[in-house]
Image (cartoon, rainbow, N blue to C red; front, side):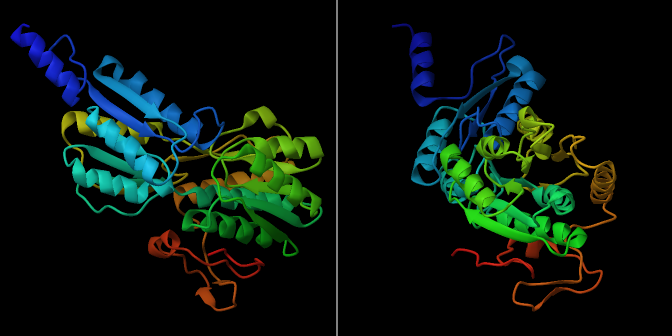
Length: 360
């Protein structure tokens, strides 16, 4: 066997680097680990749009790989490890429950860069974290919901009782109650990010309990379909536009736009400028988009919602502005005071007015 053939075989076995380009440089290999299917119509769909944007931006200078439907926990650690062994230079792990596995694998592969979505642990210099201020979009949804409900009952499908989800519930409630003090939130926890059957069942139960608006922090379009079938129930797209259900029941949406971040971080790896950091951007930076507010929303409510969006975007208004109390009546924010990022990042309480307990 020729010596050059032996070298090529060794490189394949060891997973050394990416494929070589004609000019002698190697491709940058970028991996993505997804908690749901790329066709979920929500969270994972938008992350995969970001992956495709990386391919479009860099062409044959990059190779992207992904694994979908990866359970949070030990299986995700196996998938990340295999990606690193296969020569990934950069790995995006796109669900909260991947936080410890990401750091565990990063410790074993110090030359690989890891980016964890929605987490806060950066235990090694090759780990960065990133998330979006989804709660800003929830504020807009809450305003519209509070104005449009006729039953004064708003349903909310929660995934897991983590700070990200609790922040969203609080933000939606604060802004619904501002415009409708009689509003009541009913919350169902489904303990999954993506399970269309469970999500549909939750939506149906909320509608049976009188909710004529249903919000969700889960990834499928099943709640939209359940609302459409029930008739007269307002919904909002989650993570993606879910525009196939517009103009009603889906009257607007929160859209996660990861593409600019994925392109920037890939470029940083390619040019050697990648550094550990934490990114938490919102409407102003474009990481959180607000889908079209349809004409099913009264014109004056639409105008108010767009004004709220503008104020959140330019920083003249913060979604958590006092006076606000915690659920037990104890002070949270004084008049005019705004919540700091540390409090928001670790939020583990409901604001005053929301009934029920946060599951432990």
